[in-house]
Image 1 (cartoon, rainbow, N blue to C red):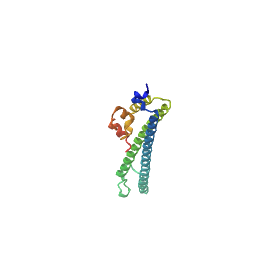
Image 2: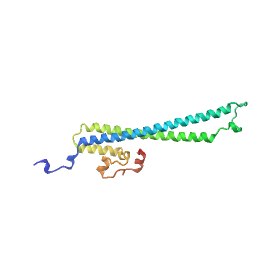
Image 3: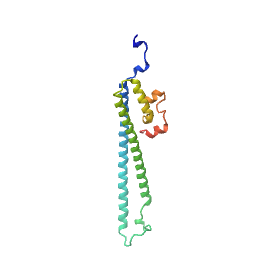
Image 4: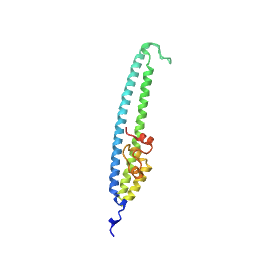
Length: 182
């Protein structure tokens, strides 16, 4: 009796396909990390510019105050030319703090993506010693479930989603939004 008479649905599972899949996922995640790094760098540049503006504004204000003949007091100056524009300073400070928070969020997202990249890399290395496609599938499904991998891929279906019959992005929408690269 030949093996062709009783086809095994799992016989089509190839470990090499799972290795290629892991490489693809690593590439996609790496691209997202690069995009987030560029966005974080742009935010850092904005922060530097705003800090320079703030310093310049403070230096201008202190130059206006240096020529006074009386010692500085703890009261706000009453002269129009020497009054510090507190509202402008507070607005600049608030904007800098907002952008610093965004940078911290992006850095946390970058670390999360890098952790998933490391996980796929480790799994890819494990697959080098696996001969059974079914075993590779099971490892991959468990891996993606443990790490909520669908949340990192937006509109791309993961093996976990395909294996469980759930659609792309059917995981927690809050998690998907949290890791979205938009």
